[in-house]
Image (cartoon, rainbow, N blue to C red; front, top):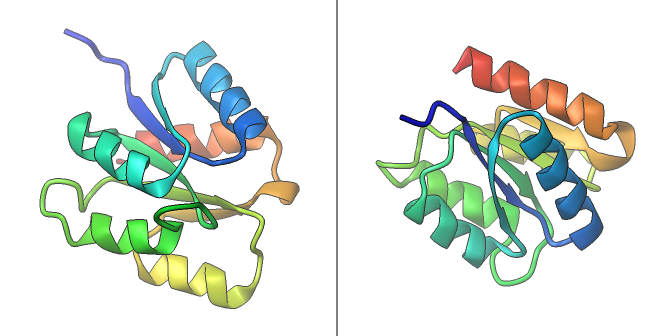
Length: 126
C-alpha cells in the first residue's frame, strides 16, 4: 500500500511548477502537475489529491472558478487548497478564503521552503 500523500500543483509558470514538483518529490510526496485549470480539474477527478497548490490567474479555468467547482463536487469538496498567487489584494484573499482555501500565499513573499512547510502543516492537520 502506498502511504505517500499526493499533491496536485496547478501552476502555469513552468519554472515555479518544476521547482515545486521537484521539491515536493524530494520531500516524499507523489506529485501531479497541471499547467492550467482545466487540466488540473481533470487530474483532480482522476487521481484525488490530498492537497492542491492552486494558482489564480491561469488560462482555460482560473483559480477562483476552479475552487468554486471543487467545493461543489461531493467527492472533491474536502480537499485542502493552498493558493499561490501574485495577487495580494485583500479582496482576492477574502474571496479565496470564502471559497474554502486553507491558505493564501503571495508568491513573492514566500520561499519554496516556506511553501513546503505550509504544505506539511496543512497535510498533518487534515
